Image (cartoon, rainbow, N blue to C red; front, side):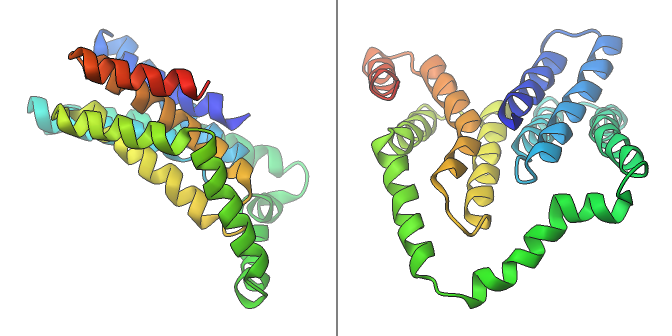
Length: 222
């Protein structure tokens, strides 16, 4: 449920910086922040959409030497959009369990579960970690990520969009590792970054061998 919201945050951020006039740009950035925050309300480690938008804005401002005021304005609109779903959720919680209940549903129960996680036996965690890593390899996700990142680095494509995608991937991987229990379905959170990096790599791989390599890996993992 959260993954489409992550991708929506990415699409809206890119659309805002691509061709949108100032008024539409502001609306798209607010919407991007809202979609990214909504993904976090669904699954709290799905912060990669917001991270992508943030890095894209900062990287774009630095590379194009836009004014500090303009960059600050764009970041404030992204932050405003991100705040809206949380404010809405908080207001809704006041009709029921209250802010304390909302906090516990989002983060409190995870903090409570951290005690047994780190004090109990690690044998089950090791088994699940092995299964998760095996799933990442046999599904082709790990291979696709490695190939895509290597193609981007070899082509020296390190512009704001690629850096934003790499930050997005790092956030997703931290979310998987931070879960602690290493269930295989954690890999669903890596799908947005993986697919977008593969698309980016296919786009910049102008030489046929690189394009064929990316296309072959994508075809093998479908």
